Image (cartoon, rainbow over all chains, first blue to last red; front, side):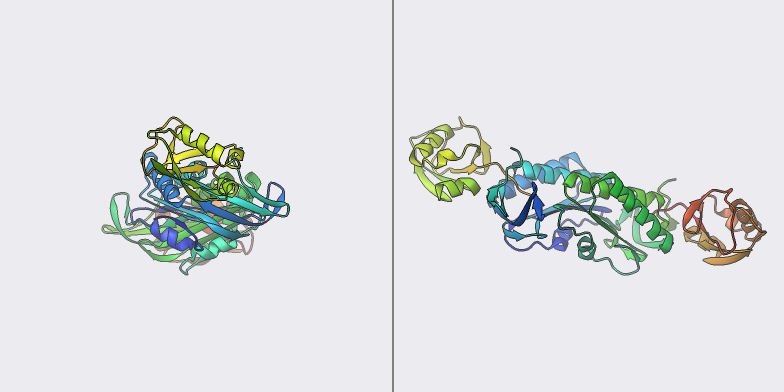
Amino acid sequence: MIEITAEKIEVQKVIDAAYAPECGAVAVFLGTVRNFSRGKQIYRLEYEAYPEMAAKKIREIVEEAKKKWEVKQAAVSHRVGKLEIGEIAVVIAVSTPHRQHAFQACQFIIDRLKEVAPIWKKEVAVDGETWVDDHA
Amino acid sequence: MIEITAEKIEVQKVIDAAYAPECGAVAVFLGTVRNFSRGKQIYRLEYEAYPEMAAKKIREIVEEAKKKWEVKQAAVSHRVGKLEIGEIAVVIAVSTPHRQHAFQACQFIIDRLKEVAPIWKKEVAVDGETWVDDHA
Amino acid sequence: MRVTVKFFALGRELTGRSEMVVELPEAATVQALLEQLKSAHPRFAQLNSYLVAVNLEYAEMSAPLHEGDEVAIIPPVSGG
Amino acid sequence: MRVTVKFFALGRELTGRSEMVVELPEAATVQALLEQLKSAHPRFAQLNSYLVAVNLEYAEMSAPLHEGDEVAIIPPVSGG
């Protein structure tokens, strides 16, 4: 399961989609909306995606993770639209037979997703709106 | 939240217990019952704990993690009793402002838990029952 | 030939458009498309950092375009 | 003095007990308790790898025990 969705993400659904009976470990990453960023109070975030390309890039990242580690199953759900503080922007779940691989693969997927997936966030803060550029 | 429980673990509850509004990252680890272990087909696992000491040790591990990394909130739930294939034995959730810390602290907690928490598992397999000794 | 150009995030806000169809000479490159966009949409020229994707894949400035290509202007990403 | 001894997992199965109260001389050590357990419960002697906890903390063999202590025999752990 790889999805770009405007609906609230149900963590359990993403975990279920990553289930594999031969695996004893599932590593999960949740990216959530913080109340402060770069020293400013945040009201909300607005996520926008190029959904077809984002899904394609994330599929490629997952395939790359499967080559590097013993990943049996992985699922990624990324939300778009307006998100309030505490809401979940992204959930990544990775099943592996052994836990070290689960952590490494999960971290790889979120790191690469942030680098290459065409998804953008705008911070709506006390001093206005800013499109975030993490790589600037 | 640190608990040793005979009830099925609800992942979302553990994640909720690790929620911190100033955090943008939650790393979660799920340990689940695999269908194969050491080349044998497993029917089920039976977990036993020394609950008071297990909870105390896990609290200490979480405190240690909070000293090493910027962990704002952490929650651990470990199940005891008979578990079928696919059931969840342990859930660990860790909230941090930045994701690298979340992964590192979560992995540290599960690694240390497996080393020092007085919790035991018996594999019920095709060829009989064995108390697992991961450190042998 | 015609290509479809998609804009997102700051690029969408600057141009006021999420999509437009652009008429180009045969075998025009990504670079040629961008120059045409900048002269036709001065506010697009204000977008000073972006990559370009052609048919869902990041592309070089020198890549030739073809009839019906979907070109996307990709400002710095910040998902997750 | 009396201490309570708790058994878990293989230790529990070998002794057939999850808990027992043991009478010991004043200031007996963990080591002395273990020797007494081994001679009173030959099947306990079959447990060949374990640690000992006193009042919820891992303890040395030389640690002195006190009235009312809760001692636990901790076979190799395998949680998670």
